[in-house]
Image 1 (cartoon, helix red, strand yellow):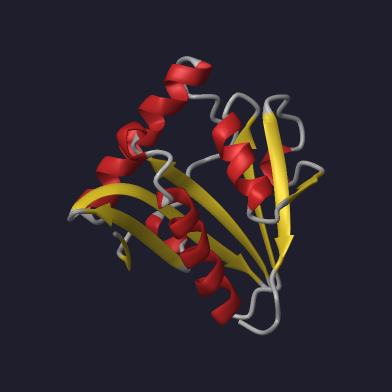
Image 2: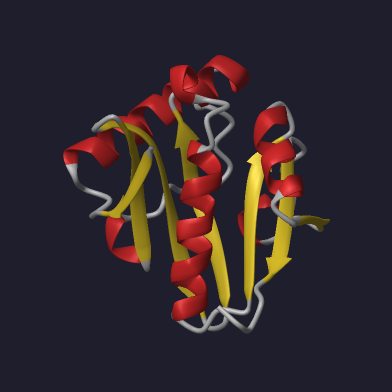
Length: 152
């Protein structure tokens, strides 16, 4: 069973998962991991979650809010836990928190080489959008958005 809990982005499990995310991005994009925007500070998150399988932290993600638009980021699942619904559970928790805070839209950015992430977002109802903010001139960025249902 997947257990998703809200934590500080500075919690040891969250920090370890984000470090694993950086290593994964470097594996795909080389040194710097294809970074095109500054990484959010812990205080910027409306919510940050860690997902656990059998008590072991295996996934994470955060959501920031700007008015009625939320941005999901720092989504990651350890490779050994992929394909078990962890990322979907994290994304759902972030969407729920965004909706509870009044967001009507969630947007996000991922890399063109992260095909599993792109598939997840598409299957969760996200549609491609034009790059936004710091991703406008980044060739490997793929941006998506989803309108949140009002009945949450």
